[in-house]
Amino acid sequence: MRKRNPLMGGIFALIFIGFGSYRFYMHYNDLAVLPTWQLIMAGAFIVYGLFVAYTVLTQKSNNTDNDSE
Picture: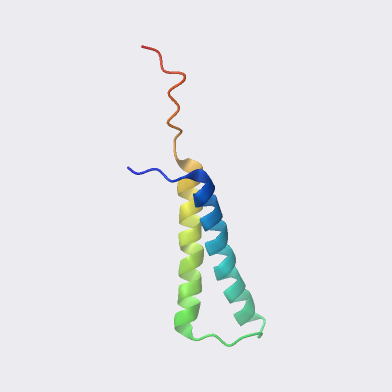
């Protein structure tokens, strides 16, 4: 399985969660009227950002310094 770069994964997770949250904030505080498809996309951004954050936080380190032969 391919591993994620923790720094880039964290940055992308923050961007996705922040963007989706901002769109929901704009819609539910009547600052913008968003069509349904844009609300679905905002929710998808949040879910994908949470997924990226979860995979980054739970991936195992490939540290071979403690391996003994």
